[in-house]
Length: 372
Image 1: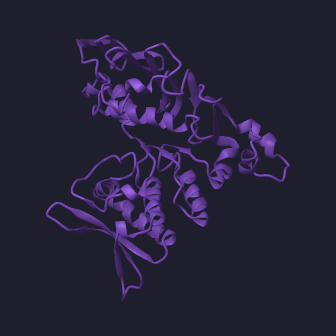
Image 2 (image 1 turned 135 degrees about the vertical axis):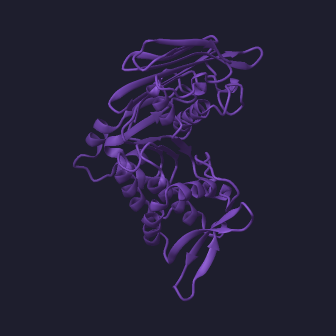
Image 3 (image 1 turned 30 degrees about the vertical axis):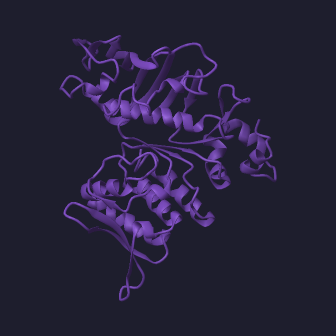
């Protein structure tokens, strides 16, 4: 479980620390930094997958430095609890403001305070699971050296952390970007959800046992749905098709022919039902295209999934249904003064005071600006 996030000198995030629950909600005004936290975790996951470098434009570009800071160093720390042990990861990225280039200055991983990995200006030191010193070597400081460590009998803890971070799914669904066909399988859903069919194809191949349960659930969600199937439309290409209507008169619709709301619900329930126990979901504005009567059933399903079907979920939302269902004891309020740095605070105590014995729900209190 992802327990702590620390971010310094990234856009509006300056010396910012967050504590997370199994289910956490980010709320607050537009531009307060909620999506920026998701951007950091998305970039970090790509680094730790070994698929990106800090010199890439969409990872930690020069423009991501806080505008009001002269410092050229960005710091990210992640605290994770795995099988009762506390892992702490620290990444320092140094920018050259003249050349507008970046490099990894430092990268550390510890377990219960004992070292597992250290990278300092190009030099790597590995440690065994018992924290004794292992081999050392040099590495490319444009990328995560940790991501390049190969599994071995002596580094199971390090690999366990990498596996956890590589299963952090960060997305903000954009139905117009969803493809209908997939010629390949993909293990991770894209940031905008555009490769959902590729991801769904991979899941169906790997977890046939879940497909029947998912279909039964979706029959209650999408009126008239009988089943989903992947239809062969090329040698390697499959198209996602929904079958609706009566058994004797079925009607087939390709994924792009469904409404934005139907496609969003298809993806949202797939995320809660088809992902594995190791996955952490971070979803930005999940219910933008979902009808009012459809929001709470999905939220109930998500809450039941956290800690069982999935490891954890973090949502960012302005929607009153989401705020009222999750916000009372699991919300983090983001705020800023003008273009200044982001501030965060837990609403657990404050929200109980604001709505206790009162006529207003938390979303109504927030709509009036009373949360501050």
